[in-house]
Image 1 (cartoon, rainbow, N blue to C red):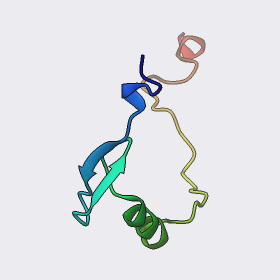
Image 2: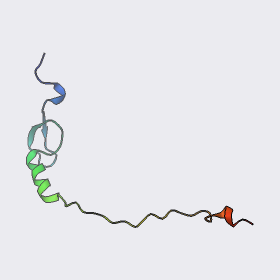
Image 3: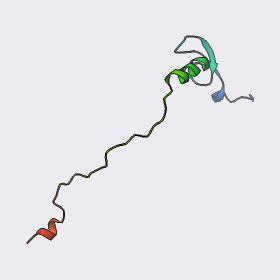
Image 4: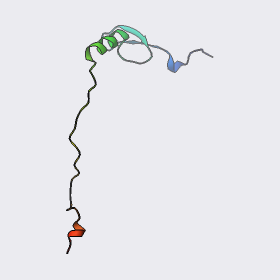
Length: 68
């Protein structure tokens, strides 16, 4: 029985960004490319204000009370 689970084993893949060979668990950019991407593309979180929700009125409010 192997010590390491095959589902958790490192794969030998080529980095899709730089083409370097890398042994990693999932397919994607290598460690150096990930570090570079975090430094250049990372953004700052900020609060976004939106207009208050106003429901669409298909009927007149209190239509039953206005009925004569």
